[in-house]
Amino acid sequence: MLQTPSGGAGHGTTAADSGLMSIGTVLNVLREEFPEVTISKIRFLESEGLIEPQRTPSGYRKFSPEDVERLGHVLRMQRDHYLPLKVIREHLDAMERGEAVALPAVGRQRDGETALEVSDGPTAARIGRDELLAAAEIEAPELEEWESYGLITPLPDGAYDAEAVTVAALVVELGRFGIEPRHLRAMKAAADREAGLVDQVVAPLKRHRNPQTRAHAEARTKEMAGLTVKLHAALVQTALGVRLP
Image (cartoon, rainbow, N blue to C red; front, side):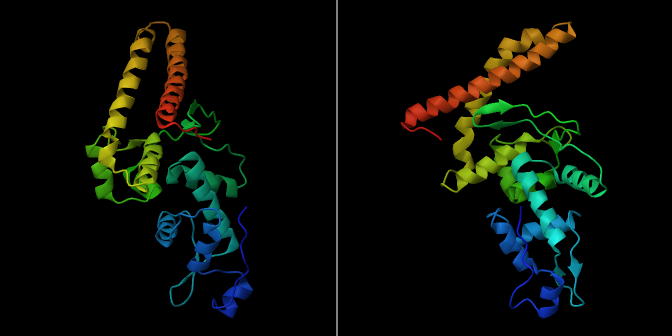
C-alpha cells in the first residue's frame, strides 16, 4: 500500500492543509515502489484519463491521496499483469462504482514456466501501439528498430499481442547491460526454432475434427512451451556456469 504524506515544506500551506500534493511529491511517493516511474509517465496517464488531478488557478497539478492510490493501482497492474491502459481504466472505474469485478488477466511466463491465468473478467489479448510505447516507456523509432529485427511483430490490423509488452520490457532491461536489439536476433531465431518444433508435434492434433482433441492440442502446446522454456533456461545457466535464483 502506498503511503501518502499530508504535505511538506516548500509545497505551500494551503496544499499541505488540504492534503494535496505537487507532481514532484507524487513522484517521490511512487518511486518507493516504482523506481522507474517518471513525471512524463504520470502526465501520460493523466492524458489517457486514468487520473484527474485538480488544477490551481495558475495551472499546476495538485494530486489527492486518492489520485496517488489510483496511480499506484495503474502502475501495479501494468507491472504485474501487463494490461493495456483501456482495460485498467475500465477495471478501476468498475471498482469505483462498487462493482465486484475480477482482475483481467493475460497469460505470461513466470520463473521460466508458462502460467495460464484464469479470470472471470475480460481477457486482454491485444494492445495498441501507443499503449505499448507507454508501457515500455520507449519512442516510436526504438519500436520500429525492434520490429526490423523481428523481436516484436504487429498483428495484421496494427495492434500487438499482449505478450509484446513482456518482450519490450525485457529488451529494455537487457539494454541496461549494453545488449543492443541487434544482438538479440540469435535469441529470436532460436525461439522460432523451438516454437516450430512444438508446432510440429501438435499440428496433427490441431487439425483433428474432434473439438476435444483440438482443445487437447492447445493444452499440450502450453505444456511443451513451458518445458522448452525450462530447458532453454537450464542450458543457458549451464553454459554460463551460474544458477539463477
